[in-house]
Length: 264
Ligand SMILES: *[C@@H]1O[C@H](CO)[C@@H](O)[C@H](O)[C@H]1NC(C)=O
Ligand SMILES: *[C@@H]1O[C@H](CO)[C@@H](O)[C@H](O)[C@H]1NC(C)=O
Ligand SMILES: *[C@@H]1O[C@H](CO)[C@@H](O)[C@H](O)[C@H]1NC(C)=O
Ligand SMILES: *[C@@H]1O[C@H](CO)[C@@H](O)[C@H](O)[C@H]1NC(C)=O
Image (cartoon, rainbow, N blue to C red; front, side):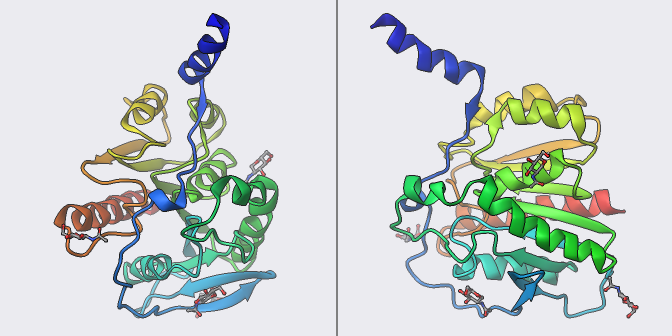
């Protein structure tokens, strides 16, 4: 009995998979976002991709790839977020690495995850990234949200992109994935986390800092915590709640500054 109680405790202390967060625990605005998406759906290398372009001239040798949360392209908030990146000057590509099967707001997470592991998710993501490189795009900035955190982490570990940022990442293994990053990557990464995220919690963030902070990760590492907000804060905010609105904008601004600084 004693042993049974002990083992999970030890596992949690050593290394742990940051859990994906139940869709019902994400914030869902009750009033649908009134904004209209500015971009369009295209097919790139066989993969449905939402593309949003800046309205003014832009550097076409640089692209931003947005790694979706589990709600995918049908979530207007994801498209509006991509448009926000385009308005900041990036040609923005959002591959549907969920293969047309986003999770519903009342969906069963455990069942959904069975069909959304790395084996299913990585091929469409890399198909789009390879196509962008073939087009002559030299520098790719990655920004991942929630479910997209694991794949942002993989792109960094694999040195596939130039620079990355992620907000309330899930499914990665802490600290193992950051130990690996330190060992094999030369890509700078920034993390935005929410104080009330039960997955990438302040405690998990502190474990990450132990590996990455204070110059230990020489390519570059930064982390910013947003207090008073929950998982999903960087994608959705209650427009009537100034704390949520400021945190969402703060995560965007912090990510943008990081990407710009490392693309110069
Ligand atoms: C793009 O495709 C997705 C998935 O079919 C759909 O939900 C979304 O509304 C489409 N967006 C646009 C701007 O056409
Ligand atoms: C960038 O724009 C130039 C000039 O229009 C064009 O020749 C080139 O093919 C474009 N490159 C990419 C990667 O789109
Ligand atoms: C990263 O590289 C590993 C090891 O080769 C591979 O298994 C994984 O699919 C890659 N993931 C991505 C997103 O590139
Ligand atoms: C949004 O925030 C306002 C102000 O705090 C609150 O009254 C409202 O219930 C919130 N809406 C949702 C869906 O949480």
